Amino acid sequence: MITAPTYQDKRIGVFGLARSGLATVHSLVASGAKVFAWDDNQAARERVRGFAADLYAMDFKDLDALVVAPGVPLTHPEPHTLVQKAQACSLPIISDIEIFQAARATLPAHKTVGITGTNGKSTTTALIGHILATAGRSVAIGGNIGTGVLALNPLPSGGVYVFELSSFQLDITASFDSDVAVLLNISPDHLDRHGSMAGYIAAKSRLIEQQGKSGTAVIAVDDQPSRDVAATCRSVVMVSSQRQVETGVSVRSGILIDDIDGQSAVVGSLKEVQSLQGAHNWQNAAAAYGACRTLGLSSEEIYAGLCSFPGLAHRQEIVPFREGIRVVNDSKATNVDAATRALQTYDRIRWIAGGRAKDDDFAALGKSVGAVSKAYLMGEAARAIGRAMPATLSVEYYPAMADAVTAAVADAEQGDTILLSPACTAFDQFANFERRGEIFKQTISELPGDAA
Image (cartoon, rainbow, N blue to C red):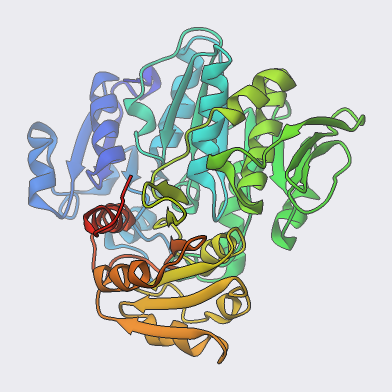
C-alpha cells in the first residue's frame, strides 16, 4: 500500500468503508495516523472493528480532517449530515487522492496521469495503462476504475500512476497535481449531485485547474464545454475524432494523425482494432496517444499498444455468438450520450435499452436510431424512451432484460448487431451495470444456436 508520513499523529475521520474507504483506513493506520472510521452499514464497520467510531456522535473539533467516500453528497440535493457537521467547524473534507498527493514526496520519482470525462474514462485509463505496460514502463492503475489509489503498491523510479477520476472524487480533491490531466468530454450527467451543468463542469475542470506549471492537459475538443476548458490552459494537447487539430492528435476516417509537433504524420489505422470501434473510441485512442506522447513514448510504441488493447468488459464488449450475428454488451452506457455513441457505431442494430433513467430527456436518442431495425425496451424507463422514438421505428416493451434479449435474438438475421446499450442505470433490476452486463452475457450464452 501507499502511505503518507505527513499524516503521522494526525486524527482523521473516515466515512464510507467500501473499496477506497477501506484502503484509506489501512493506509492512514500504516502512516501512523489515529483513525476514526464509520459506515452506516454495520457489515462494513466490522471490517475495521479496531478503528470504528461513531462519527455522528464525535466532536469534530478533535479531528484534523474528514475523508468521505465519493458518493457522499457535498451540496446537492443537500449536504450529508456529516458534511454539514464538518463545515460547521471548518474541518477540511478530503479524499484519498489528497492523501496520495501528500505521499508523493516520499515515493520514488514518478509521473501521474489523471483521466476524467463524462464517458470513456475507464476505457481510456485502461488503454493508457496498457500502452505504458507494453512499452516496458512500470505502471499502476487505480481510482474509480477498480482499485483504491492507496491500495496500490509503490512503483519503482520511473513508474507511472494512472488514475480514473470521477466528478464525485474531484469534488473533494483540492491539490492533486497530475503531470498529465486528460479530459475526454463533458455532457449532462449527475446533475442531481452537482446541482447544475455549471457545477458539473466545475467539478470536471478541477483536475486541470490543480495542475502545476510543469503539467500538461490533454483535452478532447469535440464538445463546447471541453473547448471552453481547453481555452483556459497554459499547456494543452488538443485531440479530436471529428476534425484535425493543430499541434494535437486527431482521427480522420479511422486514421490516427499526430500533429503535436506541427508536422502532420500518419500513425496508423484504428479501423481494424476490434476493441476500439466507433468515433467515441477513436476519441479515447487519440487522448491516450496524446497522454503517452507527453510521457515520452514513441509513436511506434503507442500504436503497438493501441492495436493490442483487449478492451474492457461492459464497454461495447463483443460477446461470442453465432457466426454472422454480432452481439455487443455496452451495459456501461448508463446515460443518453453514451448510448448515442454506441448507436452511431454499428449498422443493422437490434437495440436493447432501458432501466432507471438518470434524465427523462431521451430526445437525442430518437435522433440517433437511423441504424436501428427494432428497439426492445425494458424496465422503468421503457415507455419514456419509446415516446422519444420516431414513429417509423418498430418498438416493443418487455418487463425484464432477459425477455428483451430473447426476443432480439429470435428476430436477428445474418449481418445484424444485437446491442445492449441501455442509456439508463441498472438499479431498477440489478445491483449495478456490471451485474446487468453479466446477466446479458449469460442470457446470450444460454440461448439455443451455434454459440461460439
